[in-house]
Image 1 (tube, rainbow, N blue to C red):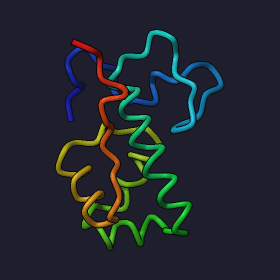
Image 2 (cartoon, rainbow, N blue to C red):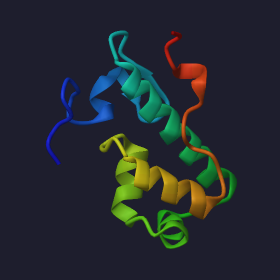
Image 3 (cartoon, rainbow, N blue to C red):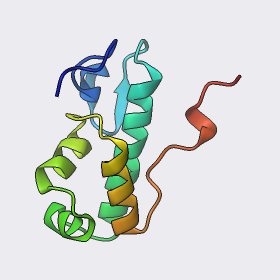
Length: 105
């Protein structure tokens, strides 16, 4: 997939030195898109950990390829709306970021 306009190739490219995905921290100049991606990754990881779900189990429950789930959790992909929707529907949890990270206006 070609890079998104104005964004680095992967969300994890915005990690601060020594940071890990999806825990962080992000670099001070990281765009809000990276913050959204990190929040989705954190929510997905928390759900998987709380329910002892393997990546294969997530894949089976959501019809999302195992490697896509792994890449999302590692910050190597931005994730797109169909993927996020499938994950939410298949896992029965909300991953999409609410207005807390949205700029006011």
